[in-house]
Amino acid sequence: MKEIFISQLNSFEETRVFDTYFLVLHRQLRTTQTNKPYLNIVFCDKTGQLEGRVWDVNDSRIAKDFERGDVVKVRGCVSRFNDRLQMKVEQLRKALSTEEVEKADLMPATTYDVQELWQKLLGFIDSFTDPHLKLLVGNIFNNLQIASAFREAPAAKQLHHAYLGGLLEHVISLLTLADRVAPHYPILHRDLLLTGVMLHDIGKIQELSWDVGFEYTTEGILLGHIQMGASLAEKTMDAIPDFPPRLKTLVLHVILSHHGKLEFGSPKLPMIPEALVLNFLDDLDAKMQAVQGEFDKCAREGKAPDELTGKVWALDQRQLLNTRGWLGPAEPGKTEPEDQSQTELFFGLK
Image 1 (cartoon, rainbow, N blue to C red):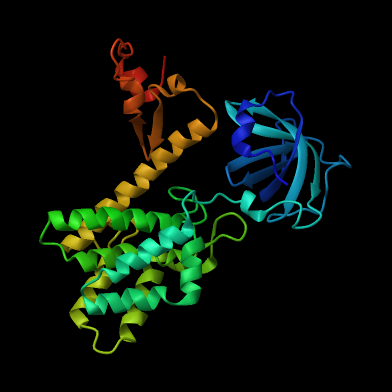
Image 2: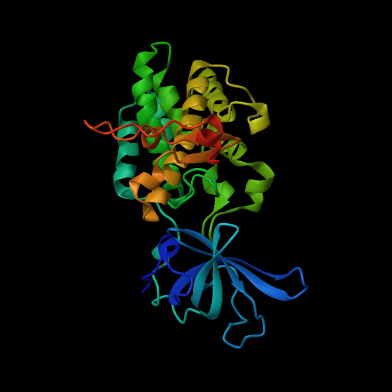
């Protein structure tokens, strides 16, 4: 049974020796600046990733037969190099059986109930008034193979919602946002917008693999999820008798343009209101989840609220300020934190 997780290691003293299980994402033989060989290993569990070092590659206590995808039990201690946490591995062996540790402990996963998320998706489908679009998304998500993959898939390899169930969580978040935005702008075709939300990333169930960490499939590298998703939608619409040709064009356009810019991988720029709104909401949800994820990571590491004050996160090429932390508690008798220079505020420099 796994009792120690990566998220806990930040609070460990560097002299503390511990034993735990990890999934191996990567192993590579490297050399130091003095030309001494060492083994670099990337471990993971459901709370994150951690680099490990085996400094003596000939140590008999280090198994030689483990590879990427293996579950291993390791003993060692943490250290910090250039302000980054890493592990000094002293012993390592392959897990003797799958009963030693649950696979669910080794892969990051959504904290939401997947069954509840799935029921919300089906509820949105039931709310459609356009019969053709309702039949389209219904046919796709009634496919057992697609449904199973969609419930498990991450939404990305690294950036946003990069965990099991992340794709479904992302889509439900977007559906909730889109359903609130649609009544505000009467020009929008609600069911078309929601169809775009449901299908814009459907190609990721083919683009990504998640058996061992999160990786791109060969087809995903060569084709990409946008093309894959459009192809699936087109085949499904072609199989529906009398599906309106113009509506088919709009559905495909929403999928093909959802990245918003040609340099971001979109074959087309958004040219209808529903495509424009989907692009904005998709970008918003991805970025907000990334920021929230950093905030949650700080909380998991046990940092006190005052340590989060003024916290700045990098997003793309920008710096984002933790506004609530910087403003401080709005309570009687509480004073605001002392003002900071722009350099301190946005780049964390003192």
